[in-house]
Length: 203
Image (cartoon, rainbow, N blue to C red; front, side, top):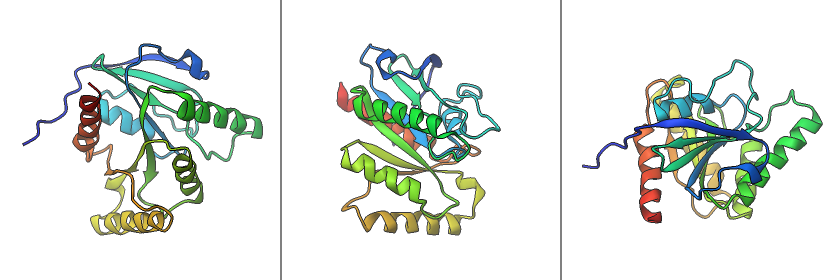
């Protein structure tokens, strides 16, 4: 039986809007991104068991920076700005697109991008377009369904399957898929185990 992943330490390192100012120590980075209000901060706090590591906000779209957290002094968890928040100005959205694309495409240390999707909704155009962009650019990513505790098990299975079928219309195979709940810690061991496996393969 595989042992549970252990997070001994997790702490904030730096926030910035310029990918060139990200840490330069070449540790692997696992970045988290998703539409505004998808539950990203809550997921990060659940994974690290640190209630205030990533500050949750009642105001969607608050994360406007690349935030680096060092985990076990071995790898970085990176909190990226959310996309698709309608109340931002055109200029703000353009700035965010630049921040996101420069990190995702140019950051050599980025080992995997976890794209968060709210499991309560049917496939959203903005998410599908983002997946397509990642595929076109050869970016390694996984899909993380959030808020699994907000729906019944039947609805959850149905929604996730619908999403997979929609993706398979355009993709030959699916990226890794995780189902999570920040309330119950569902999916924590699977997601952290995936990161541990990748880290082990890099040594």
